[in-house]
Length: 441
Image (cartoon, rainbow, N blue to C red; front, side, top):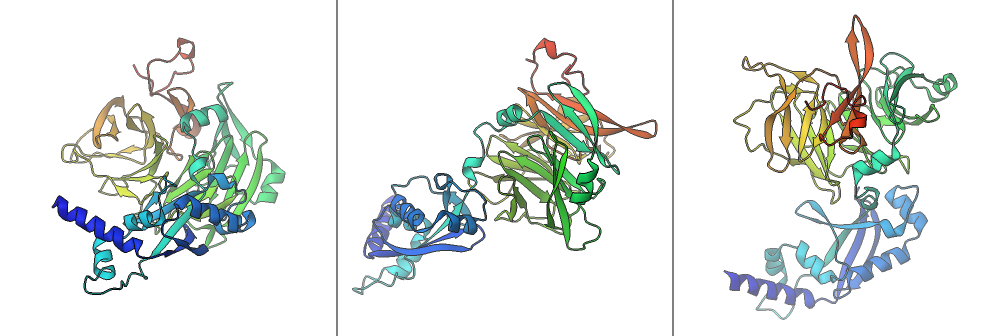
């Protein structure tokens, strides 16, 4: 068998070497053609990229990639293999090597090699399609550290009021801030409702708001928490309900889930535009919980129906959403819904939300997911019911995360700062600061 494989490799290599030129085309992730040309098969992919950059002006690339700012040094190039994007890492590879890695060897042999003929019929195979994007460099090497160093104000809109709660992590102070009246009139922002969603992103609050006057589009706002200034970013965001948002540093907000949609929307903070992620969700998700793990994987958890869903996508290599199956699903029911998520060493802890008693089981502990073994288990942490509109906890210092909620007390709602301590090795001077329902005992 090994000898036969070697023979196939040799034949395929000979086929590719018989053609002098390969037709190479460049596309953005939305399948829009940017550039095309012909190159010798022995030309390195680095040389091809150099020619691509030389023949495409910066302004043209901005338009083709739909970006406001561009540094050519930070462009990433991908090939599509088995319907998955793979980043091109080795610029010394030749075009023939790249094509051979993409093409089906059996197809090459069947269409391109004929032992009884002096000619080949492989001209239709000698093409190379390359995808160009501008996302790789914008994810820091240490995402939590980046957020910790850049963020000191965290906010939550107040339901049915032109106000928001604002927490200052340096002062350890929680305030109620009124919207600026002039900003209200200029931006057109309304009171926050259960049909809206939001997320924090480096001292800004981004709000995706239902537009009751428009059946097709919603509004997207940002609030500068430092200056208390509101800006309408767009009134042309797709109509959505029951979705979630997450900030992926440095410049991306992912909008995921909602009724009657499988599309994932990405808003670019730096360029102030939005685009669709190149892959659809495999199914509809209602108010999913979102978390970014190991500077690479976006995890999505959803438990709104009888089936518990876990999806994962590699944002560095732009992969489809992988449906994760629990390795111990037969041994544990999943009763927690609409929960917040926070990283706890090598696991993801589910906090708050609702606990539904299924099969007459009274469960008083939070659930925890080990993303290395894909196992779900009950945590030692007790369950407390909190409604997290923003599902992802925000890092505020090493091993310490927080999120803001509203709690009902004596027929009125009060704000509460929910802390999570991922390690017991916190400085004792922070004892008062860490006084919270989720502190380790």
